Image: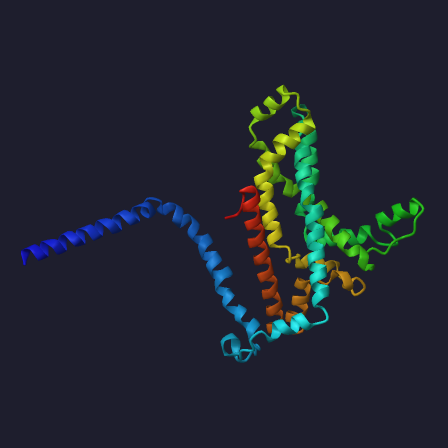
Length: 321
């Protein structure tokens, strides 16, 4: 009997020791967990808990019955979207604007960062001026930016059309011709974000070992050769990570700017998934249908993110996970 009690006490003590050892790393860093707990709580409350509402994409939502009480309809709303007249127009416009933005807007901050990085130390004032001028547009609100675009491109008083007329051409109604919408959207975005986006590349460039440049100089490398063989490989992991993040939002063209630039005359090329979801869900009160479109958009973005991350990991050994 005594041996059994002693054996139980030893087992209990061993269990307590095991639990204490497993909790020690967490108790040792409890301040860090307290510090990050508000962020975790924010994501749980505002990002994950609302996901239960995704089920209305598979239901015929009735406001009086609520989300849980509304009847299930399966994939009916998805089928309706795939068969609708606007499906291919929305896909073409959304993917077209995203690819256009990626092809033009992604390399520009890299080139700008490489150029700023090459400004000599004796011209720091010039470097500061360039950075200030290129960073400033980032702090403009989208409403102000769109107002400036409309004002500059006005056929009667816009500075762009004034310049065209001065060069002997005819005024162009940029905001009402569908063919100009994507170029206006992408070029204004590049102007607004290129300086701000170049900051992360400048940070990556500052981490390159100066001895690599010294060794290249000894070998007779020119400035362009050092940019190509030292700077670009040095920032390539950062470039790949940002490219993966950009590809993950390929189907997620921002709503606000597109909606503000949109009008009835350029709707043919300006209607994208996000604006269509807003009109279907908020204006026309088709909550289940708009939820189905938004869910389809998110699933495609998720698949693209995983595929590009997998490809980058296989090709460059740099990835998000």
